[in-house]
Each structure stands twice: as structure tokens, then as C-alpha cells.
Length: 144
Image (cartoon, rainbow, N blue to C red; front, side, top):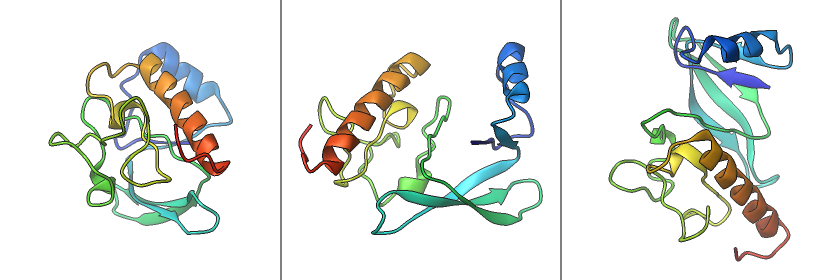
């Protein structure tokens, strides 16, 4: 698992920073931003991400099977502009009582769509909703 962080250090509390540093399953890339998501028609989904190191400008690619975006108080949705329907503040719009976006096989959850609560617990709940909706979509039941 890789945590990509656009700054040179985390602002999380010391307890969580210590836990992160002790977890050998997580690699942290500091001073790095995602500039593009890669994927094709088959298999559906994200297959990789293009990265840019903010400190030195170098670009690289990382193979991935999924992406979770945690963005704080401003939606980091620039990457989806012109691809997904958004509101005036840049949050991804979803169908009522759903995580379905304006693109049939794309679901949005957490901070990229929630401008009201912006809490980990609500993002986790929405993530569960998105996973269930994606599972139904893949099984052929395109409704919620």
C-alpha cells in the first residue's frame, strides 16, 4: 500500500504518525501528487497513476488496483474536471441516496462528494455504499 502526500510532512497527530511509520506494509511518498489516473476498457477500473514529485518535478508511474483520495477541506477533484459532473465548489455530484456519478461505472465517496460532514466515519460509510453499488454494477444490476 502506498500513501501519497503532497507535502514534506504529515499534519496528523503524533500517535497516528508513529503508527504509520511503524507499519511496514505502507510506503509513504512525500512531496508527491497524483497527476493522472490510468485505466482501460478491459479490465475496468484504475490500473495505475501518474505521479509528480513537487520538490524536483520528476514524474513516475505506479501500478495500482484502486485509489482512495483524502483531501481535507477542499475537494481535490481537479483530476476529474470535464469527466464527471461537479457542483460549483468542485464536489463530485452523485445520484440522490447513492454514490453513482454522471459516469455509469464511476462511484464517488467521502471528501470528494461530501461538503457537509467531512468526517472519517461518514467517508467510511459512503465508501461502504460505493463498494456495494460497484459490486451490484459489476454483477449486472445497474440500479442502486
